[in-house]
Length: 333
Ligand SMILES: [Ca+2]
Ligand SMILES: [Ca+2]
Image 1: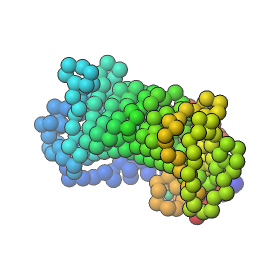
Image 2: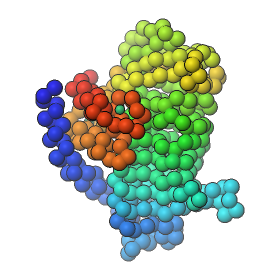
Image 3: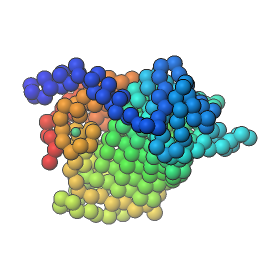
């Protein structure tokens, strides 16, 4: 216990250094950088010029939103007369710590054809709706309230939080960490869940659920799975699954009590696997960098350091830090 704690304290001191490294690693020929107090608009993007920076709207473009920098609302809801999807032509939008992709309840963003990276402290505002050829990578950031992940979106979550109350029913979720809280209407179409904290009732519309677990009990009967073995689970209306995910977090699906609902045509597969829970940067080992990432996540407001799943991201506390340190102590393999 003593040694990891010391390591953890060192990480606290050096976390700023890592953040600086992250912020300068996105160097690209074709880029636009948006800093404190600056707002990039649709007109800037279409003109290819912003504050003296020249760029081209294509798949090589990196739009970098730094602390206090924002992307203004782009596109408009299809239900409005002027509604249209804003096409980013394959460009990448990076929201770093303090960077914001804007939207408000009265002025939505409606975005297509982009990769959106939400790093720790980076976020979308209210009512950011994405659809069609979209990849949203939640790397510690926040996908904000009233947003919507529509058809044609793939969302990859390793850390961070979906804070929206609605999800379109045709998106795909790959989740190894982070939080999807309760109270969301809709759900994804295809799920791959190996870690993180998943709230109830997001399976109502799904057609395929793939769970990666260390262990699982179905209707109170533990399944004896060999390493790497997969098994199909019948989606009965009284289905209850209690599992430990590959990344170590608890998983509960309970249709018996009405906590969860499901589409009974869904295909459910559980695969036995144990992954490296504390490897937050996914490089296959646990080291200083993973601790540094966790410390940043824990310190960010709103915090995205939920690790033990007891409060679904709203109440990070000592127990989350303790769970992370335990996972770190387990290492990889
Ligand atoms: Ca690592
Ligand atoms: Ca907690």
